[in-house]
Image (cartoon, rainbow, N blue to C red):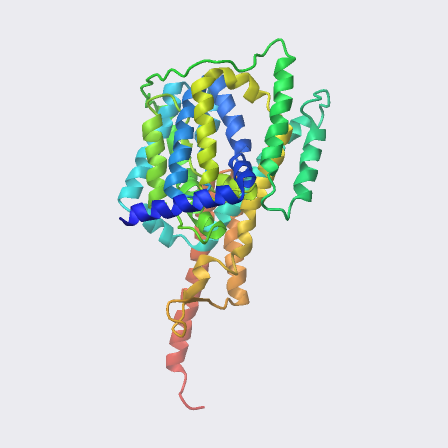
Length: 435
């Protein structure tokens, strides 16, 4: 009954938010396109996924996520698997097998509540460091893969740094207008430019009617597929589940926070269902949540709308969308990814004031909590742990390395504190009571 009543509460909030700010919710729904489009298009061109199936299944998962969680939680590609599949030109069967490997492991961690235990033992500065590092990684990737190629090429009138500068200027001017439909405007402009590009090209075709025909793809659990799945596991558990749950609590404190167990089961369910039909391996993510929040989304209504849009496109147009999606200006996508990365990185500012582990029960105020005082030394230690976690992520481009580095730094500080307490205790026994 509690589950049903929670769904009803989230539904009321979704409807109320959509009615009060429809453009902001639609804009927020498009906030994660900078991550979704490049990876999805490249995988589809390489023959590593089915574009139509990916659109239909990810759209359905968007719908389910919006209804069950009631927040703008993204459904996005598993980045490590996508990168490896693109580099090796993996087949559809190997790509979906890699996603199923991650799904099985995450499902086991969820149903045994090991994910919940892991969340409790990971210190907040490490979680903040993962979020901070993921945000800065998005900014770096936007510059290197989406914007930098245009620095020496100005012969593309529909996709160059002029469009990037215009999009960036609009972003700066609307910084304080949190519900301004920035992503919606950028999407419409980019779509118009893409249509012009495809329509004036003799090598490409505009989308046309082609009904989706689902087909069965038996996963091929080869050594390469298992390796891709293992490489994705740290990113999924740390960023897609643990960091996403913590970020939801920071950004939307008035709504029920999805537990790490629920997010883990959600990720597992998406991939155990989609892997049999050639759908792209999917997960949630802190970066996508930050992006959709940054561009106006405040409820599950935003991704419900996105899900409906994806399903319609996948069923009606399917693979014929590939040329149009590939022509979407990367100069505009790059600015959207930068904005999303900065929004995610901003969560680091609450490390020493407002973080969840700094609130404690107050005896005087009943069930209320008060913010405990943090010494300058503790502030410095927490800041150092967060930065070392971030440094590991950026230096090695690996969340697992950053996580281990942050945990080692945290334990080193704890070991020093333990030694100092032991020394103090010993000194206290030998100190005379009267001097």
